[in-house]
Image 1: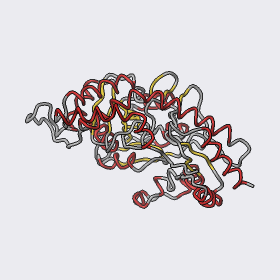
Image 2: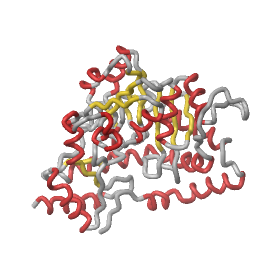
Image 3: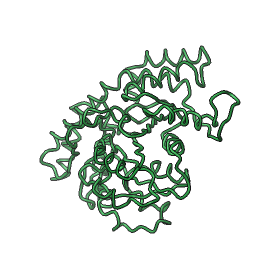
Image 4: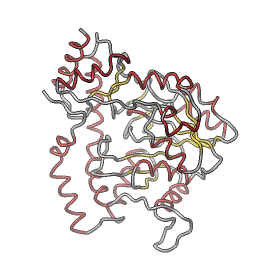
Length: 368
């Protein structure tokens, strides 16, 4: 049996007729930039998130950067975020001229440790970026309370959490603004790069739209300098089709995660934990294995036709890119430890119980 890490081909096969028709319509109308497909998707995705406004942009990194710029972040400012994420989270902070301030993680959820955030706040702190990593919502109530206490903005990095809910609220509608990626492998993925900024603040949405479109509202009325970051018509049409299926796919991901948990009982692996009153959407299914065993287990899985990954093998403050911050691995013990132990197993909606049992059996044979 061969099991890929993610299977976009099988997803396409299931919605081929809808996707092909949507692409053909865009091409027939040459509606490549802006227009009805963009407007329709933005409205639908805002509604899906339980928010009032959505602005499509070029990719998830741009979404974070533009959101921070729209909030007025710049040189001399500091933004707190988790030590365990993809570099886009911290990269977007430095793109504004601000400084990323890393906080260690909760070892059970891999999200930012809320009890360590306040110690990182300084007079220069302007915002917190909680990352809903792997599709697991961060502890937003505690984060919002801290933000209110210190007058900080909350920017949700929801690039891996489309449709996840926290205490009845959909991720993307909880903070001041939220940022999504539509990279092809995401739970809601385009057929190329794409992203979105979602907010309930009308003025902020207008500022985001201006920044993403050369600082203008009308064609040549440039009120400010911006960038060129637009979600194109083809991607909007594709995403509109996929959005109709997203809830079902999320349910299938959750069901597969619970099957993994069931069939991995009795192994040495530590399986995912959900905090109370959340629905995670399992962009990734992350387990922990002893550091000295991880590479051997990956090789064993590969030999049996099972793909796997590591998200992420180096904690952000430990990257060479952030050597100038003069951190040591001991500054973020939980993020560092996790980076040596985490392993991502295949996860996609169409994964079958037969495949999950096969993966679990191969892990059990490795344990023996």
